[in-house]
Length: 126
Image (cartoon, rainbow, N blue to C red):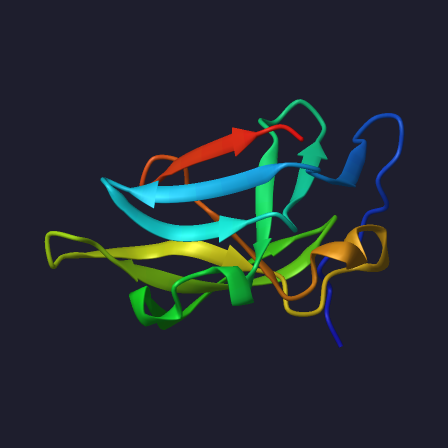
């Protein structure tokens, strides 16, 4: 049993998940880390929109599973990957995923997102 709160998005904290509709390319330097036409845009309250891409569209050879986890009362438990960078270093916990998100954001299950201070996220509308 958990005492962590579970919250439902609403007028005071809206969350929308919509198909991006175009192409999302995620780069670390000049290297393409992910390239997807199946990305979803998650817009949560007043936070910047986040692009979630299918793991199948990510260069999995660059990901290292992490033991790090966090909790969001609106989305659930997040797991992380570290990202191997072009210079040989590793950006710890730079990629996150909700393996079993709450119903309100169920569409992001199996997708991953990247911290924008580690990679460049390029969105090309349809």
